[in-house]
Image (cartoon, rainbow, N blue to C red; front, side, top):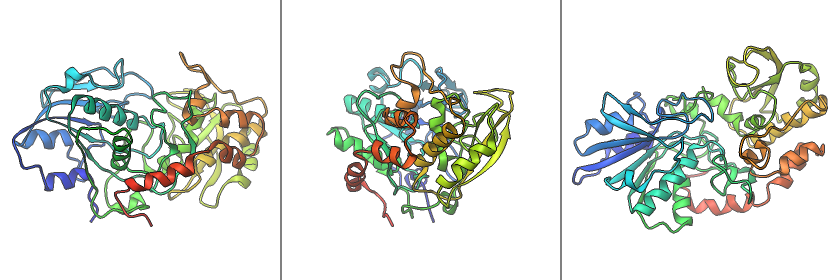
Length: 385
């Protein structure tokens, strides 16, 4: 039976003196019964839970996208919650010096711009500087852990949505990625991975008989996650990526769009695993709040090998069917349009503006991804089919 790292760990706990620990986690740090990591640690007399660190969206995983999260307190446990998505995104040495151990447990998506891995990097860096051991409780790669797709992070486009020099879709579990970063940088502190049990790649999440705990407000299910590597690129445009609707990152649209024209243009570009239909939706937050948007809804039932391409194809077909409609938007204090930071390169944006076909754009923007795909194999913790 499949078990995530959290369940494996508490079945085989460390047998030594009582450890003063901090948990790096959010709503997803739970076992199959829904018991949270911080409660399991607090109830175990081998550990003293000193504090909780949280990433973007906060401890409850419900803060809005991009919104700074303040420090708070877990009142039932009388433990401080330190936000790593505010003025400080990396824990200070002062917050680590009284600890014996850091435990990281967050369900990720296997996508570079999903910022939990930026927090993972910062945790590993800070722990190494403090000489503090880290344990990562591993969880599945929802994307399948096999496919590597999309651009590498290029020089000049580093940000918190592009904090690791990896492919946009990188094909590693959180534990494998931590092992890669730790080794790549010759870190001297101890890193341990509590591996999942009875797991191999690729495995459909639905077949694991394990609950989906929503990792962020607009990630309600696995079906959303499967298209996210490509459709999240719409965040860098004036077109809604479906936030605030029932199908975030699957509904794409804006007021005034001719959905039939867009659908006719995109359908020949999609693989057999991806279906597109016309739709209308009214976002309750984010872009076009309270307005009726028209567009398309994308659907796929299992991990696909071309999710980044699918998002680029959606943008290309909209730009072809609605010339002049799509704008690439800026954000404060960023030199380039935001889509370039999501993509890790300006090649996708420039290719779209030049009218290049989606397959050409993906091919020419993905230099180095094949080399990364091969290099990462030495860090695999699970069999790959």
